[in-house]
Image (cartoon, rainbow, N blue to C red):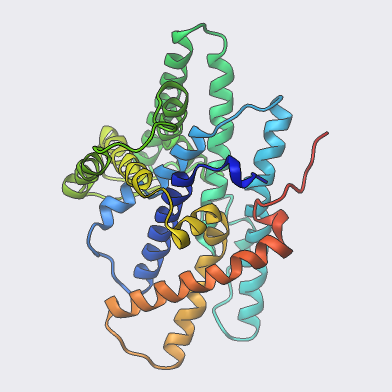
Length: 340
């Protein structure tokens, strides 16, 4: 686990803002708010921000086996545990008691074929796992070149993988385990890596122009993004270049505004443990919606969304310390596999 002194405050805030957008989106979708304001703008950079940050903090570690162990601890083990228990066993148990429909018999392998499964938000961990592997391979290839050519080759490989992922989406060819989703996200991963290692963005102090620049950057997807992109399904009607223009503009706007505030207690806390929120918020929303309907509540879609969103955030807030204390190995807080 990272020590508190090693953390960069505004990064936690940025992740907190983003995970709150994820929770809000899934809540809004539950109540039929398919066209809430700025939906397409938010969709253009919700996932790219996390790929960007993963690239920013990318390390090769000692060797490939060490790298693989670390990414297995942080991504693959949480995905595996929560897929088995919250996408397979829990739905089957609830179906046995008549509380929901039984999942299909192939639910155990649904993640492999990119089919819909309970607790679908955890797909992102698998996508991020493969994006790390792809970038590691790209990085090792680029090491064969010297000086400035190295970063150029790394960028070209990342953009080429993104283009291939985009083409696969256009041809409606789905690769197993969200590998195509990882591929189309590789330019964001590279952009994060480049930002940390070839600019001073991460460590420069907040400037007076941060706020107006953040507003200007956010305005790009807010005003001009008219088509949504679905990273889960690797589907979009957007032009290839616009995916990255909107995604990077929104990502940088969130990072700049986070740099201004540095820390907002609850949101920063959610950001620090955003993986736990990601893992559990789908089921929290589902449970609250069942209670909402059981009591025959009939608020407007907007009010119902706001109510469930706030309650979901509060419940996730209560679950975070429980997972940290009792299940730290399956939510990326402690390593299950330790390589000496």
